[in-house]
Image 1 (tube, rainbow, N blue to C red):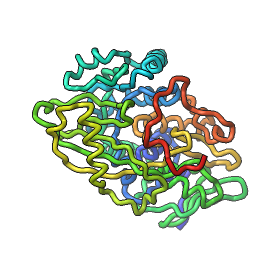
Image 2: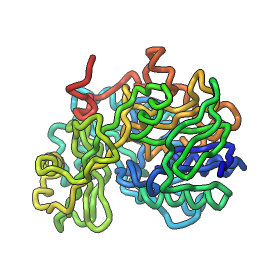
Image 3: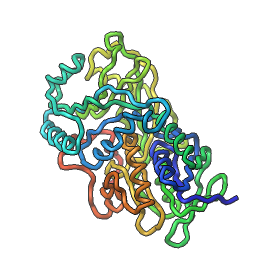
Image 4: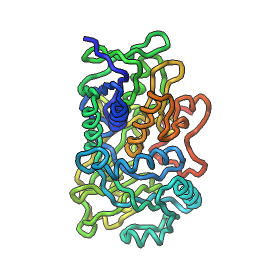
Length: 397
């Protein structure tokens, strides 16, 4: 049986669900198709940081436009609150202190409540932190983290209430084209005819695009995370940290835990077969990084470790927008491990683009696929040290 929709969204992670909700809220007949359970890919194991600090204006604007949705979730979306307020700091080495101050100026210019602070001021905020190698920090007192599974479920619930068709456990096997136009998708449950298709399939996107001749400059990459139980003296928790000195993050989690991002160099993984367990070496590295920044964590105990994944673009920024030369085909993918916090705004922008022809919530032209052919970059003028897990030692230059 052939079904019909105005728009098919491929991928039931946080961005796909947000897009489906935003389209349904505008009266569009939308089908959200996911090969597994919703949030069973990158989103369900996301760090789910909610912060605005980036080294470019466009990601920051998407995060800033998304922030009120997380903070006022129950009023705007219904259901239980998903956001936990902790405060946030992004720390850099002395060589990048001036760049951080410039980026804070940019963020303040778009309205973000953020301040550049010294290492001594950070020590006052987080007395247990080792600040010896820190040159400066960007402090966001209002930021924190969210519950990733509840966020996806909230978008699904609202999209369904507004008339969207949500199809978990339904694999898209082919994007159907008629000459230079998309006309629908083939799925494991049958065909869906649609005038527009949005690929939001994360680590599976490049594979899906390749099957109809589109080479995305994106590769699937593993992401490692360790969870530790904090010692009693840290029972009250800590702020969310992005540690650009060491190239990782950590944040508190419910139940007295702290999640630690561990640099990982596993590229071109198969998301269908990648195991979820961590090696002892990865767990040890996560512990070392955490103990360096918070020495009292030497009394923490390992709770669990797990592996996730995402699609990483060639410049480590999302690919958003229409595909030139294929009418009706859109991309919202390759978020490169940073897609969660911007998902509410991405949903609005993609819905505006499909329905009205232009994104209005935030200008997303900087994220277009054509930037790679044009030689443009999303990166701002004041970057920090390149994260070690963003560099593939086997990549061809």
